[in-house]
Amino acid sequence: MYSPDVSEVALPHFSELRRQCVMRMLQSPHALWTERDHAGMRQIASDYARRHKRKRREDWEFDPCIQAITRDVEDAVPPLPKWACLVAWLAPEGAVTFNPEIISKIALAALNNTLGKPQPSFGPAKSSFQKGAFNMPYAAEISRRSPTAFLFVIDQSGSMNDRWMETKTKAQALSDAINRVLMELVTKCSKEEGIRHYFDVGVIGYGGSGCRDALAFIPGGVLKSIQEIERQPMRVEDRTVKVPDGAGGIIEQSVKFPVWFEPVADGGTPMCAALSMAGNAIKEWADGHLQSFPPIVIHITDGEANDGDPEPTAELIKQLATYDGNVLLFNLHISGAAGMKVLFPSNEGDLPCADARRLFRMSSALPEQMLRAAQNAGYNGVSGTRGYGYNADFTDVVSFLTIGTRPANDAR
Image (cartoon, rainbow, N blue to C red; front, side, top):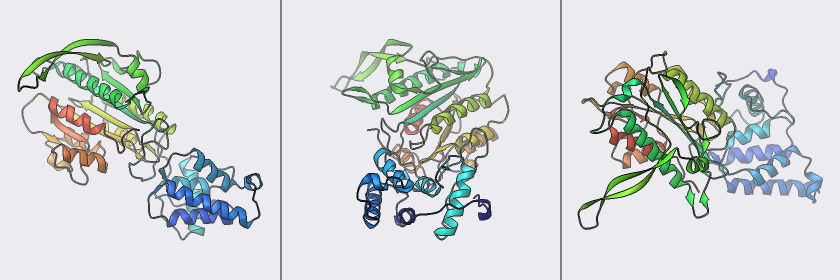
């Protein structure tokens, strides 16, 4: 933990109200700031105003701390992380900044000198596309005001042309799986009045032509709003599926199948470049959505990188964060070969080769709600289980994508 010399920082003057607010925050047993805490803060502000004979709102609005409380009560979407509130309210007027190093100096120095040295868990940034994070639970509600993001990073190298299913190559089967997941995300956002903006979604493909935005035909950056995705599939195909006939038999039925992601298989495996592209897109998104559930990156490959070691880049991605937690990076290795299959492991010693162990280390641990989803799907998840799969088949891919796109709280 970064621990500055107090002499490095000009400590701010803390008003009586500001100290009361901070103490109230520290006394609450919960990690997140909720509506009940907001109500308590409003009462503190009201009592403060009465004591100082500031009965009219305009008489006490000048106090920066009351301004911060009023702004948060009116504009913020709980739950908020407490350490984020502490940083905002402990910083001196005119010096509130999201530079993690400056925040660390101001907040830690102030806390160490006024509140008995509590131990926050944030620190200075380490790279140009890393923020540093508050260690908070993955509990933010997903809403139109506070959406989350999913980014799929898909290997489209030449080996993806290998046969995988009875009638399809890896590239074709994976294309179907991604298109189905996109449709499921659209369905989750569908309400009576239309598609609600709960998610931003992107797909990066990488192979012989380098890295590309696979949804570039939809205007915007790598991450597109779910409304734009719903409005602009590349095409809609008529497909035949088999469904129960209600009498114990099976019948064929024609359905509409939107296609956004095309199967491609060509050239090498520039995995490092693809993850770097993903990291830059995720950083930009996270910087603009600090109160949201953190983005989820799902990387699917059938081989190893041929442009270097992807592990350092993966570690940088996992250090990106919103106030609700670090970005989640999950990795899935697919194969058509017989042999050992491992899904959601908790120990790299369970894996048979160096490449598999590297992808395991590159993967985030499953948050509690995703761990429960994996357990409910029949996997033996324990604390420390990571979002990683080795030697997966098509059924595993579908299950992995379903669990990996299930954040903490239902969109509403």
